[in-house]
Image (tube, rainbow, N blue to C red; front, side, top):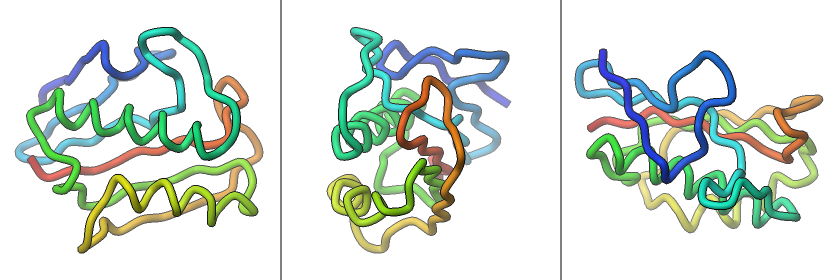
Length: 123
């Protein structure tokens, strides 16, 4: 088991790793839309989706992987009415065949963000 750390994604805000590699598989922790350079959270679900997906991409690259090798994602959203808006942004980060995905509406997320995204990637 190997830990991945990068300054290009938000630091863990609890007792967990940004990402862990086991064999040739990378498991990211959920990425919320914090800009790692400024600590700021963008306004609006589209900008938050862009930031969270950029954080996921940066973690994958820090582990030596490519976002195109993502096998599965889980998207936690505060409001299922934002599903379509998030899909529009999501489709700009992934290509066909798209990763398998689960999307779940949740009551609350850390720092009251609108979404959180985690990924499983083949390295």
